[in-house]
Length: 456
Ligand SMILES: Nc1ncnc2c1ncn2[C@@H]1O[C@H](COP(=O)(O)OP(=O)(O)OP(=O)(O)O)[C@@H](O)[C@H]1O
Ligand SMILES: [Mg+2]
Image (cartoon, rainbow, N blue to C red; front, top):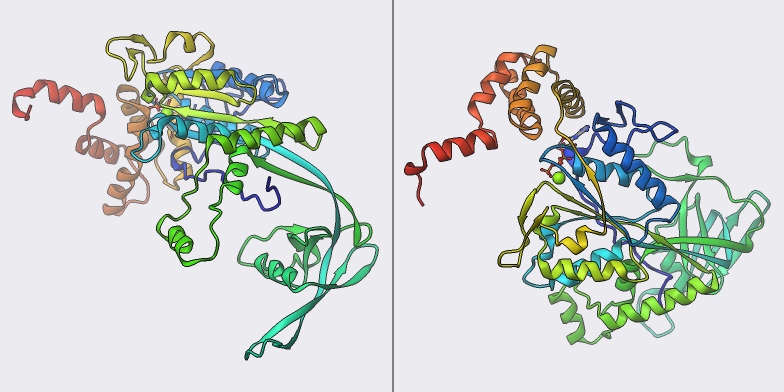
């Protein structure tokens, strides 16, 4: 199994609607602070979420599942993301939306499986023989091409490495020069080179260079201690899906057909059940030998009522397996029909047997004061200046419609204010845009009132 050059496949996504959320906002006893870390109110749900975070950290939660249930706009997605923030980047967190399973190309269960494995981490510790230090010199030594071509080839590369204890000059194979180039190593970087494989890892820029102005955020690392040539414990955090991907690259050679194949189907790699089983076997071996440690992460399935009976059944089984993450569901549905069935109605659209295994956290509608606080937070995050009166008008709008609608009115109101040459949003601007746009409830009311005017 390949673990040398495993690339992280973690999903990156913009979650701008929740960018103000930095955590659960609990004190050291796990009691929620009314307004902290970007979250407001919803205290019991946040306290419960805090307990879940503790259970995940102490690894008592694997294979269990949690449901966040409550009306729209009551902060379910927000709390799930806060849980992710609390867990930090060492614990994998894989967010998905129920409807993601419906694709014409990939089987529903395949999508679920992939996300399951994205949510299971593996921390691999290996003691490796390495050369480590700050690069003091990097000189490729060229010779005339012996095969009679025009260009020159690199015969070897001279590299100087410095640690707090000493310096060493190494003469390296040209293949290592390639990996040095791939990692974009320059003089002043701290790197290590594995003695066995020749793999190069750039750890960051030496902090003696930290005063320079850099456009890009660089990671500065201290000058390594100890000798240049030493044994070093290397820790790698990967997910099972990273391993699947790294080992599933098309095995094709360099002939034209297989190169074409790769062009036509970019990044499409076949991860088979057989490969997964194989990887599980090796992972288990590593765990037994104490080289690797399993880090169960979180799979967050938002809008879980979008799943159908087939995927629910599959989920249920996957939760029972030996290697399973913690699953967090969220839904705003009450009793509704389970997708893919003719007539089975169930709470939250989740089959009863699965529901029976869940811990449920309820979220409640906000009162006006809380709405005002949340709107204020959003205004600050979006860099919108708004008068206090206008905020309270807006929170009234939020109370009679939904929080989300009120949040969405912020930007149009700002534009209106600007058009009128005002820097701050006033209550008049809020009423003006509220008249222009409809919230879901009013829209539905109009639809029923004027049903005869619309096409059926
Ligand atoms: N307690 C809170 N503190 C701060 N911001 C919140 C809070 N609750 C919700 N928000 C913000 O309000 C907006 C709507 O909340 P969110 O999307 O979490 O609702 P939801 O319960 O997931 O709704 P739905 O059921 O429609 O998915 C988001 O921008 C969210 O960040
Ligand atoms: Mg949501």
